[in-house]
Image (cartoon, rainbow, N blue to C red; front, side):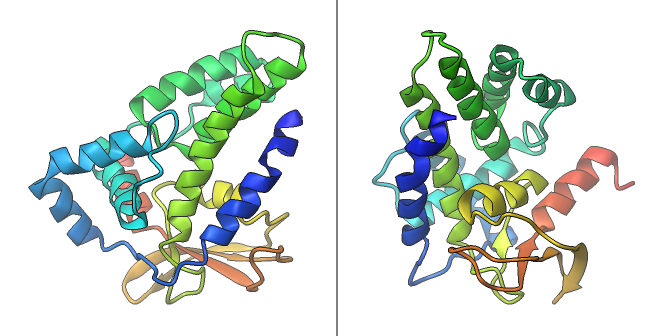
Length: 233
């Protein structure tokens, strides 16, 4: 796809910007308190981060509040990719996949996988000769996804004492595949460390952007939301 050519410089730029002097780990109790005490402020940050072109004046702390605060405001709405959306994309019915991804993003503008599917679907439509969209349209979705993944990058460095915080399982795979450009992973396990649940991936090989032998994701919010969705089963 031509999209890949367009995003090479973007990926490099995002990875460079992820070398934050300060990390912003997510304290979920404090995050819930922020949302509870000032929901209008949080919604304002969400609106700015989820704009077609995300507000570049947002600080990384504001992006963290917006991204993780959204999971508290929305609950579990829009975090899971529906089967019919996945099927449409796999079957290369790109117009249907785009339509369904856009509908999902109306409910949850921070679904990283839906942003990727929308971007890749538009790129495929353009490649087919359809002039309904342009590659700039595809790039807008991809940029928004990368900004969100860059926000996840600000929460840690991937080791067990400084994990990356996620709100969905797709966040983990999107972050490893599109942000860190890890080509593959080895074993995956759920571990408990200092009273918190983690998804830990043993990496078969690193990338230019990540060289540790394993990567840790803090999944407290994932677990909480899944328990609500499935009634703790």
